Each structure stands twice: as C-alpha cells, then as structure tokens.
Image 1: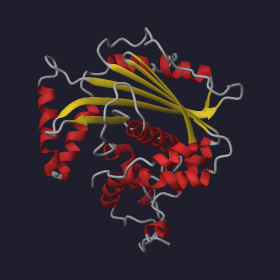
Image 2: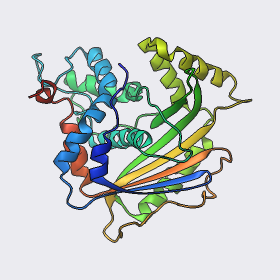
Image 3: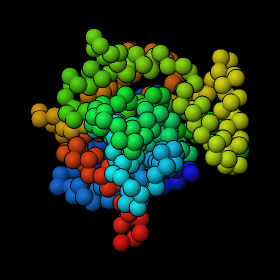
Length: 315
C-alpha cells in the first residue's frame, strides 16, 4: 500500500522550535524541543505518520512469516511484530529515517521544492524480515542482538511534475545519537579509524541514488497506474545518468538528546558555507539538527504504541 499520511504539522509546531537558514546551495534547519512538552501527546501526534511509514513493510514481513497484522491476533505462540520487536539500534535508526521524511514533507528546505514520498523503503530491509522470521520461529539467538542498519538510502523523496515525471530527487542520511556532543557530530560527519563519515559517503555516492531504483521497483509491484510516468522517468534517468543526471539534493539529519553544556541555539553543522569536505559541485545540501530531551524515552514509547489494536478499533 502507498504511504499516504500527511505530516502532523500541528504536533511539530507544539513540540519543536525552528531556526532556518538558507544561503545559495546550502540550507540549515535547527529543530529544538520546547520546554515542558508532554511526550505522551507528542507520541500520539506522531503515531499515525510512523504507522503509515512502516505499514507496507509490516504487511510484507508478516505475510512472509504467516502471522496476522495485529499484535493481539489469535494465533499460537508468542507474538513478535515488525517493527516493535526489533532491537534498539534498528528502532532508533528507523526513527531517524522516518523523521527525515517527516522533515522533508513538513518544512521548507533549500530550493523550496515540493517533495513527495510515495512509499518509504523499509520493505527492502531483508535483515529485519529475517529477524522477525527467527523470532516467530523460536530461534535461540539473542532477540536483542544488534542488526546492521538498513542498506541503501535512509530517505528518498522526489519532485513530480504535472505530467507525472520525476524532476528532482532527494537522498537523505539520518543519524541518531543518544547524546549530541560536538565530538559525536564530528565523528558522524568525518568518520573515525573504523568507519568513514557522512561526507565521504555522500562524495562516493552514485549520482543517481540506489534508493530511487528501489522506489521505482516498489511502485511497479504496487501497480498504481498514476505512477506509471514516474516509474518510466526513473528508468529513463538511469539510462541517461551519465549525460543528463537528475538534479539532486542531499539531506543530512542528525538527531539526539541535548548535550549537557549545549546552549539554546547552538549548532554543530555549518549554517552559511558548504564545507570543503563536501565535494559535489552541482547539488543542493540541506543540514537538519534535531535536538531533543528524553529522546530515548520518546522513541521507545512511540514504537511500543505502533499498531495498538485499541487505537485501530477507535477505542
């Protein structure tokens, strides 16, 4: 099914303050949690958007292991569901990926484009599907052991013309850290001895994101006629990638809890000049910093309430 839930702008407005800056090809958006926020109300406001983002993957994975969609279905054995039963590192990663899509749809970013996300790409996460299979099958492997993050683009959005063709693509990288210290952000962006950073990944990316082809594949499987021109234009863009690549925007979202010494309004990513470490010369670059309080509790509570049968029944 197509993702179709609008971004909960009312919840975002009550939850987060924003400071937005744009200069040339660079955009920077700072989102800071307001004081005295009711996290339960925030969860309730975000829940339908997050459910919609994961629902196609949930249906596919549950069909694969032959369990019902809802967690209180009357089948035998313990109930393990997607995404609720996955380990913390996956859940926190998913939170960042969905939040990236939420930001793309709810806020004005560099270039002022109208971005659309026909589907999220979670159903392409084969490691998550295998983990649900293992859990339902009674595997003795530790259920909370880490999984690798979903491969491919964290967020893919497109600008669709009136005729249905793709005019521009956005590729997003999303990172969650329990504490957002300047040193943590530096490591994320520049890497360390064991892993290269976001800048290196962006520089090494193919001009046409892998996730865009995944998007076309999913739309084909869904057999939605209105997206036929969109799919065809993606395949044409792939054929012509060397001569006339699609215009592209790169988005980097870094989310986490406020560091102890951080002052309101402080930023860790450039706000006025594209950094020298970012090499592409013809792409727009959008930074987003999301600074929370008690973000771990928010993520845990939010994912524990996804696909609550009482909410589905309107109780």
